[in-house]
Length: 371
DNA sequence: CGGTAACCTGGGAT
DNA sequence: AATCCCAGGTTAC
Image 1 (cartoon, protein in one colour):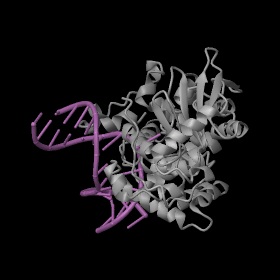
Image 2 (cartoon, chains in turn green, purple, yellow):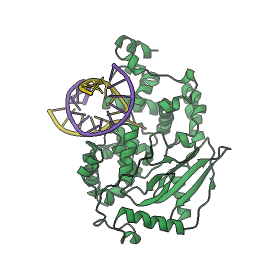
Image 3 (cartoon, rainbow, N blue to C red):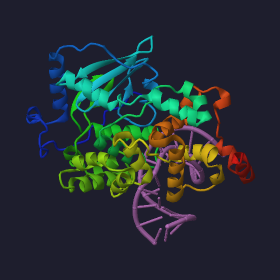
Image 4 (spheres, rainbow, N blue to C red):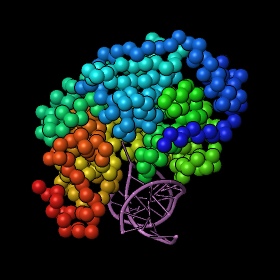
């Protein structure tokens, strides 16, 4: 189970050193040793309170639910992951408050600020859910069971490459692939057997070849990664800057811009927009959301196939129901739909969609949703 | 423009 | 044991 640690053979030579102290570090193995030595010299960090309660941030409904694949569960109520160049653990205390521990960082004050930003803490989840609940009785019904399911504000580059791995894929393999990409970045530290890395810059990502990615099991997504790195590097001012600048645009332009990148279609674009570009009304329409929509929102579309046009119909339906933060509502509804989370809901709220039994009986399909 | 078939891979079902 | 199907899609006809 704890078999991670892809070691891509990336030439560390031609890469411009992000920081001077990396210049003399030839292999990633050596880098790791060095980082460990550094870490052991720095003063031990301690758990500190984060000023949010469980209703604003519930870790199991925020990290392992598909918006990021870089965080790992490292304890009963603890999750650990990188935030920029910092490595941070978060955990719930018995009173449901949240504490954080900075494992490594060159600047602890900065780490706290970056963490709060990453967690989108300026946005009040309780207030949003209040309005969702008054707009939709089903949301009101499931809300008490999904409290603290928060939308993150990730780094755009990190978010983009994670979701580039997600197309037509399953969680386990996406996690493995993201782990491979992550290991191209600076090693941070090992916690509970998991190796953590700062997510690689575009310059680092540029050093990996399509063949190496294919060997690592990326399949046809290998050429998407390579192509997107190249496309970004050709942007005036740099790809990272170009991506970040999308934060100031309106959603349609953001989607349009992202979709020019190879491997990025409407769904992946919406994920990046929502999870990293402040596009709170973006609705990633995947198979799960399609299920929700055709069941609860647009029953007349039941049985139809998911085309780009219908994709935007669904997004519109969500926005007209939940408003400017529809993406946050969608996230909660989506989580309620995930098999592992369904057990959180009482059975009368848990619409088991038994696809296999429905398929094969076309007549049933039409009937089921027209209510 | 809307509908379809490939596209890599690994795990689970048949 | 051999196939088939599918998984948080995108792309090319």
